Image (cartoon, rainbow, N blue to C red; front, side, top):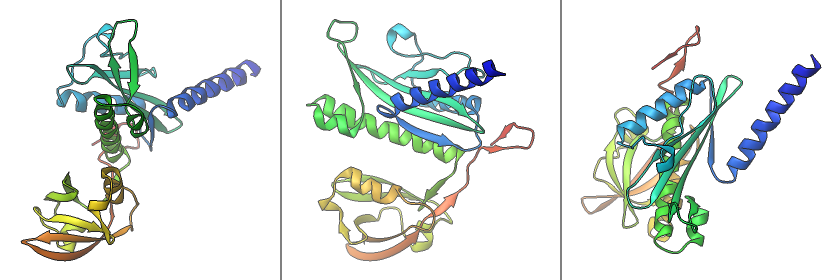
Length: 255
């Protein structure tokens, strides 16, 4: 029994040390009621859909062992010029799973001055071009990837519209039916210029995205949008969209 307790303590300490070190470089996400196999399967499928290449470790592309039983990093190649690694690690935690995600850019691969640059906004501020732009783009990829995984396994809080930032304005691309944005009267083609009275022209892109992406169900925002040259005022409240993966009573996953 003492040996069992000691083994359990060592395992917990190892996982804590791993995720503590990972947290300094990677974004972490806790998925509720999900298992390691389901998450890896989803990540693999989605990245293959995007056309990402699965090659060999020497090409900085793939480490992928038996995901049904082991916790291993899943690494895929991203890009063509400099070597880029999009890294996922999934580990079980009770009835949940923890996902870490990180994008690394390798400069001068294989040489004595090879360096690994972790994509984050903090690092982007410290690096000169071209790595600054690469790191900023990489940070957005990591954020987008985790949001997609979270929405699939945990559900997501949303207003119900897709958009793109163009010249400090939010161009609405699509409004989902029967969601808060449609109920508030937002239309595809509207250009949002203010959120909660804040002029978007005075904000950084990260701050603009944060105004829309943060907050749980019940969060309400006021939008000022341009439509046919006229300003319109809209108000909408976030809604919870449940996960598409649900744990069944026998432990399997249905989508």
